[in-house]
Length: 312
Image (cartoon, rainbow, N blue to C red; front, side, top):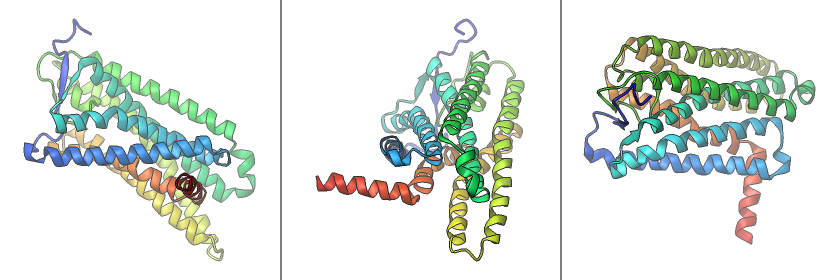
């Protein structure tokens, strides 16, 4: 790579049009988001690992999602906090593409894991009598491992494609972290083909799981309507709508930005970065609350742990 590029570091601009007087406020927001995500996701992972009665398929999937979000936030947010707090905005060439690997691999993993959660809900609601025989801990762990490996290969492929482009001039990235599109447009050569390949990969990685999620929710809602006489139908419907909140914020802005960037429909760089932060970080904060802390079993376990800690 060294003989292909004259750029040895990149500069993260974050929100390019933001004046310095807002730096403290932006860094405080990123700091708050990171700490809430760190605490909530770490709490969920710790409870599921330490409490044996939570060693169930659904909670294992939730733990994988929490771990993915925790790694993603740790790979991106501390650098943005340092940029706006201390002015440390540069990343080495290697660090940028390492971050790109995490961004694209974990972004893909979240899509797969959310789809797997939809599968779990679909079987639990539509085939409740056969749930235990279909969904097992061993099967879920194997599928999660496969998803981690596939996602790592996707992230590695994208990072390699980006790193192989020559960079010999501009090095200022209009984003809060290194991802393929804002980095590749800084290349000395036309990177349109690389961006199109990654765009196709992104469509496959996100549209296929989203299609299944939508299909499963249509069936689930139809099933809930048939259960209208049951006392649990309102609880099931409320659970589906709250889960839909996370799904909406994860997929819709992401696919919109991917499409817009291909056709350069967003001229406002700050708005583009805002949308990227919206679909990257908001679900990471909301997921532990919606998927976990609103789950009675996890919530009751957390209450018991807290009470025991304070009583001792």
